[in-house]
Amino acid sequence: MSLHRRTFAQLLAAFGASVAMPAWAQGKTVDVSMKQSPKMRFLPETVTIKTGDTVKWTNPYNISHTVTFDPSKAAVKENAALPAGVEPFGSEGIEEEGTYSHTFTVKGTYKYVCVYHENMGMIGTVIVS
Image 1 (tube, rainbow, N blue to C red):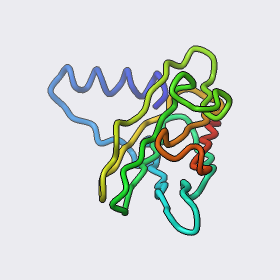
Image 2: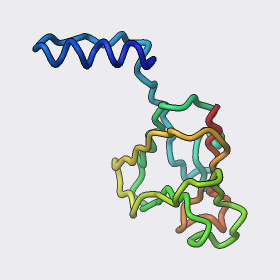
Image 3: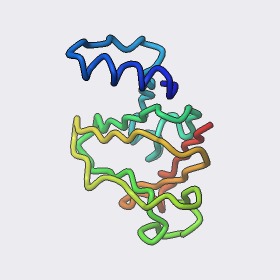
């Protein structure tokens, strides 16, 4: 939302009025699934989104997975990378039918792993433009 619209909305709210936010002002959610066959992987392996968008990972299987954006937890440091200034983040173990979501607010390329299955190729990328 632009600064002018936000200021206007805040002024109206101060007078007890509410403002409905237009749908285009909200970020979208992109779904990523955790797959087991024929190999452990995130599907899609790469997503491209805009700042303010959310990625939601879902584990439909009975094998636990993680979504880990932390180079210190990756077996191969280069498999997990963050734009400058972004602190590491991620999920704990995601069990069957569990989800993990993250809203991206900084542009750049984010690489992540499942710490349990990185050695099997379970690596993903989020590109935020």
